[in-house]
Image (cartoon, rainbow, N blue to C red):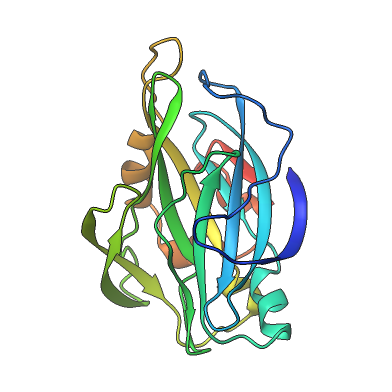
Length: 217
């Protein structure tokens, strides 16, 4: 369920706002959590935000419908993405979405790290899963200032705008407020091996059936 339409805002890497009615500080498995996706224009230093309602420890696909079309209409150049959980100041590392109006990274995997129900980190877990797509390696910095290598598939030409809409796989790792261990993070590896990435979001919602637990658009 989409909670918030795209909103223009001034971008400040230390002041990204995830607006929601979610007042939880800690979570148990199955509780609702707001995940905000920030699309950041690197040149203009402005951002646009989408908010999604997800359930903790449900392996969930977030489809930012018309995200590519919306940004392209405003003059698509260089855009990055950051993810925020609820209203917490904790923000994922900022990574590329569109580079020089040509290279588009449409698919992302994000792991929400939790300790006793607290969100302690947001970790990108991308990879070059599809040999039919271009791939690049890069270094990103997490919220603790640690750097590590990552890689991701990208398109150099969008056959359709939907191909280049941003799509996110959200999973959880760690423990909830009751001490229960999260299980969804284990699904992302086994299920990625069963599908070609380019097929995962190629058409209607039935593409997701059997792959993720929930779908949010």
